[in-house]
Length: 137
Image 1 (cartoon, rainbow, N blue to C red):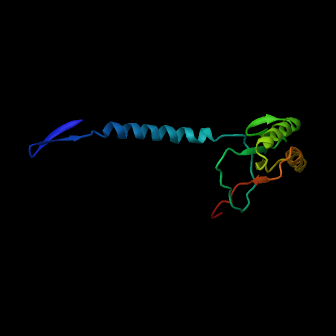
Image 2: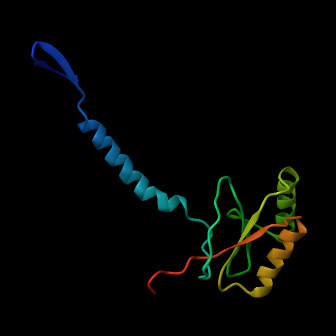
Image 3: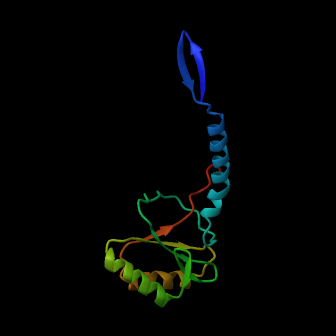
């Protein structure tokens, strides 16, 4: 803190340079780590037009990759295990919605089996996740 004399009174001023330096370093760190934190199971989503969903809470996302493997929120599991986990969640929150992400190159039968497993667990609201279309292209 620096003090100056101005008309016989003391005025304190805060040196903001260290604060700006720290904020810039934090900004760079967050810019570098943010894309890494959002990595999940890599799937090639189809492009379709539609509106997004508002996400206030942690969502349940079932993913089908191109090889037909099932994931619940990035944790690989088989159909029976997926049904058990979803059924346990639905006992606590019967109104819970599940989002299905399927690779564009996944076989139709694998996606249909995943949807059947989700329905078998008691889920009545299934949302399909897609990529928004590229503008200007």
